[in-house]
Image (cartoon, rainbow, N blue to C red; front, side):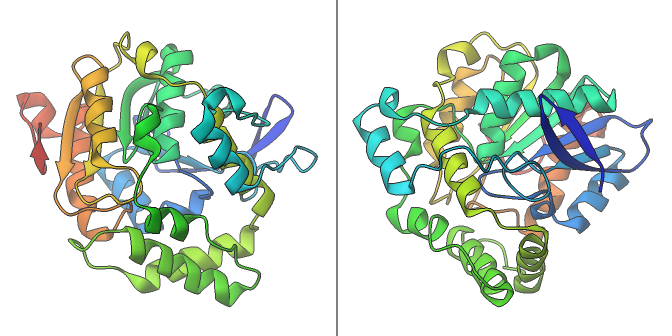
Length: 308
C-alpha cells in the first residue's frame, strides 16, 4: 500500500477511480483506519464520479506510529479537559493532523479537493479548511463539532463504549467493532453486522495502536476551539448530523452549520454515530449535489433528508 512522506511521517493512503474525476478526500475519525470507510461505499462514490482518496491518520493503521511520544490516559485527558483545555498537553493537535492531510494532497498533486470528514475526521477537515483553504474546494463535516466545550459531552454510555478496552485478539476485535457501532449507531437503520465484523478484522490485521488511540483523544481535547475562525470560512460547506447521535450531540452539528457562513445543514432522522449502508444513498446524493456532480446542484435544490 503506498505512503506519502509528510514532515517526517509516512501517511498510508489508497486511491480509487479515475484520477481525471473530481477528487474526494475521506477523513476518518477517532482511532479509525482507512478501512473504516466501507469498500462498498467507496465503490458507490467512485460510481458517482469521484476520484476517492482514503488514508490512515497518523498513529493508526499503516501510517507512522509516534511510539516515542507520550500517551496520556483517557481518564487523565478527560479530567484535565474538564478543568480547562489549557491543562491538556497533547503530543500533537488537530492542527498537525490537518497538516498531514494537506501534505497528502500535495503529494498526490490533486488539490483543491472536496473533503468529507466524519467525527474527529470532521474536526480535521474543518482545520484543514481553516489552515489550507487553497487545498479545499468544498467541505463536508459529518457527526462532528467546532470544538466548543459543551459539544464534547455526549452520553456517558456511548463514551464508555468508545473508550472501552482495546482488543488483544482478532476475535475480540471483530466482536468489539460490531458491538461498538451497534451501541452508538442509532435504531433507524439496520446494522450490517457482517460488514462491521469484516472492518474489525481488517483493522486488527493492519495493526491496532492503543497508545496512538490515546494520543488521538488527547489531540481532540487539547486542540484550540475553531468556532471564531470558522466564522470567516467562505468554502462551500455541508454539515450532516444524525438526530440520534449519542456520542456527538446533534447540537454540535447545528452549531457548526450556524457558525460557518452559508453552510447547509442536513439532519438525518434516527441516525446515530455511524455510517450504515441504509444511509449511503442519502449521503451520496447530498455529496453529489454539494460538489456539483448531481442534478440537484445544477437545479439549486436541496436533496436528501430533513434540512435546516
